[in-house]
Image (cartoon, rainbow, N blue to C red; front, side, top):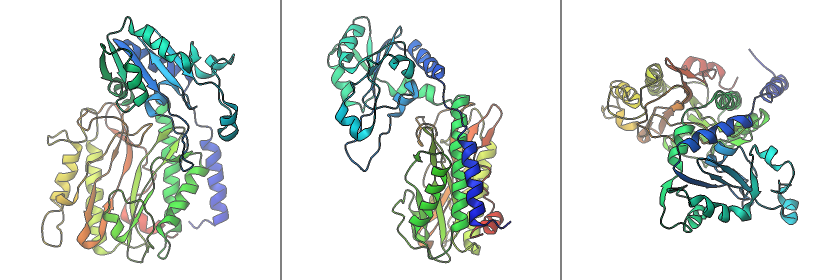
Length: 418
């Protein structure tokens, strides 16, 4: 069906209104996360929130573990957790800084605790005193290995064991709550719309960044705050570069265009890749490779369920299932199997970060969100194909959250440039 550009933007606007109704994570859920984590602690956990960036190229982006436990999205905060207590520390308001970056919440404001969802909110200057007091009855210090401020604080307790806070937090982040899944769905819906908009605009002669701009505009219009990662729009020879992001090449007729692009909605990400022909028609060789990748992905998705893993060499490995299919279908120009051109993992966990914490040998459980993204990259032929979906593991199998975005070759050919 032909849709005019004006009608397209009306439809997009209506979709934006619908997406704007998405739920956010309630304060009670953050409290519950902290309560469950505190049960597992035999010491003091210290997390430092992100600070305002000093470079105008960057925007404020809360540290993911801090965001997961607090839902707090103002700079300069700190968190102290013990088995019996939890305190959020806030920096003082600074008038000159607020002139540039906007108003913040001061620790002495009457509604600071209510806004933060904490019973106890203290000035950031009291963090050291409260830490030393908490360490008197603690065995260990939990802090992120990359957090220099937390490491400096830990020097005040040199005899205590130091542990990485990322490990216990990651165990909770692996399984998503209903509220988290709802936000990942919203990010995915907006991203699917962005891919469709790119297909509609696609034609030879455009520069890769023009397609990226169309996609960015679409998911921002639909409520995403930013890209989940730097958009990849890789045409022709760029399609064989896994994390290509320059997006500067002019798209030519006969190119495949690999688009690995996702939006972030209310802090939660998604990750979707499709590979399409620039002129709307796969060549026979492109179609051959595309169909092999698609079938390998379908095999892995069909096998995804609790108990499986993303990597490994056993029968529970989703990557092995995809690799076995690729290795037994098709050849390179020299008659060799194609498995050696599947050069990356099958997928990763998705959540607050597009590469959310989680070991690739973790047994999948209901509520985990992963990607399934096999690919074949043939540098000798300037031909790269990757097909990626964001997938929710259920009690009995898997739900493909990005399934509304077509991936059958015939469907793609009907939509490109239309």
